[in-house]
Image (cartoon, rainbow, N blue to C red; front, side, top):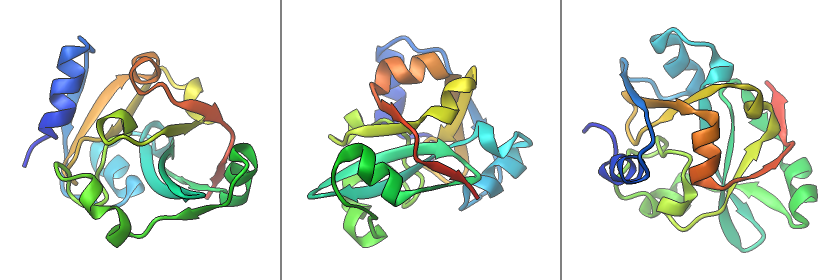
Amino acid sequence: MSISILLKSFLDENQIPYSVMTHTTAYTAQGAAATMQISGKELAKTVVLWAGEEMILAVLPGPNHVRLEKLGTELGKSVRLATEQEFSSLFPDCELGAMPPFGSLYNLPVYVDESLAADEAIVFNAGTHRDAIRIRYDDFVRLAKPRVCSFAQKG
């Protein structure tokens, strides 16, 4: 499997310049960053959460963790991690745990930690545990239309 066809079409249709980075199989953000020889904080990981009764995507630097209480306060609802079983069917074009940070492709709202805004470019999973995409952070924001807030904790 190469990058998600849905993701590739989305980026191409919106004329977003991007580069594909293929790496050895990695199942964690830090592992992927290491195999690509990039800083872990440059890698944006996507975490699936429940916020009240709806699923959301939280996007944050690879080495960080979601502070559930802080995000819950921002959203005004309780927040918890979704289980793989709960979200596996939502991303049919992706390997489990390798989904890209574009909620609009899956009808999910996106929340991004403000710490990523300091980066000129971000790298994220492209639907597999071997492929990543690098795009400008500004292009990510333009396409993902995330709500920017503070919820990441160095971890």
